[in-house]
Amino acid sequence: MKELMPLFEMDKIINVLAKISIFGGLNDTQLYKIFKILKKVTYKDKEFIFKQGEAPTYIYIILRGKIRLIEDINYTNYQLFEFTEGNCIGEESVIGIQPHTLSALAVGDVELAVIPKSSFLDFYNTDKDLFCLLILNIARDLSRRLKQTDDLLLHYINKKS
Image (cartoon, rainbow, N blue to C red):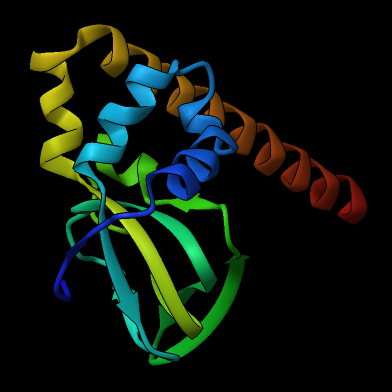
């Protein structure tokens, strides 16, 4: 991981957090607790943010730029998803025990706010209400993504029939 820096623009960051689904339903006090553990990190174009197979260590919030999620098969990169400012990635990996299934690549210069996995999990001991709400929101996001994946899979199955 690159050098982490403190975040100073609280109003801007809180507004970004309030628009991300995993922070939905959090009150101002809870959003401030999230803000206090955030760190900022920057990446240059084509730098890897994390690689497929690595252990997850952060939740990433895109403040500026784009991130492309790619799969590396036999040294050939396949672009699967692209995320832009205001999106969040890595949250499902942080609560799971599996390594990253994809690699994340910076598209242009990227500025991220990151939540360290250890700080996220510390909420279990320090603020169970916040922890439970975050886990519930992540579970809801995963459920939505699974539904989209199911719909896509059914579309292709029906197309072949």
